[in-house]
Length: 303
Image (cartoon, rainbow, N blue to C red; front, side):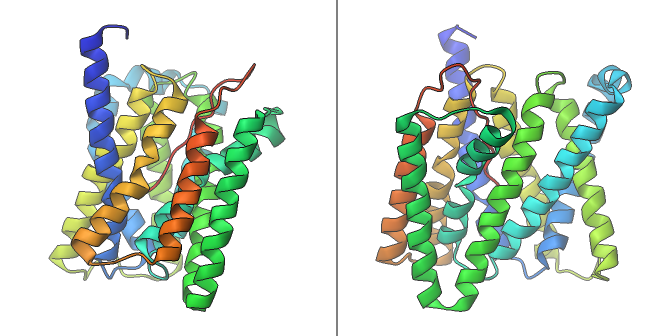
């Protein structure tokens, strides 16, 4: 896509996607439903919105999908479910700022796992960015420890969310070379939804009885954050480099922090602001490096 007009359209949609995912933490904070129920309804609604489009436009591709690729999509969906559960639960124990910024460490986990599995190396500049981001997260964890054990627990869950999100992307990166975003998202979202339904049955959590406001928020998460956020990022991967999209996705913590101040009156402490700036600076340096003889690492932030 070299046409300037088309590239402008892509950039506008990416800006919309950043706004969409930035609403994730805010919407979750405003519902009292358990994290696994929130994740289940968010993904179920997304799946059913995908269903008619996938069956019409992606029917042939789905039918021709080989077993190995189908199973990998399912495993990817499983990690997506674990990502949502850990991240959403973290928001019950820590602030939007801490949770969102720590989940933003996902590119670091992606790089580490990518090196372990594919022997992909980082440049010196990329390694510096990684150290800065890890140092910033350690600073935030230290501050949270003194703020109370609940905050520390929430931050650990947020980091687990980043780890599971990285596994989701590592698997999806290879699969996306073979199948479309529509088919991949349809199968992964469907598997994710099924896993969450089973999990909530095992936990004996009620599927009904939530307020109209909660159901409205569930729908908002599906439309704004998943379809209007993550799916746009996945679509844009076809037109511009993955590292550019990853850098764009780093706008989510900024957006979430702004929305938290504006809508929740949640003012971050000076320490959180400084450690967050350190993390984001490290991520910016890390994602801005050129990776020689390797394909760009794809990153994916949940919100």
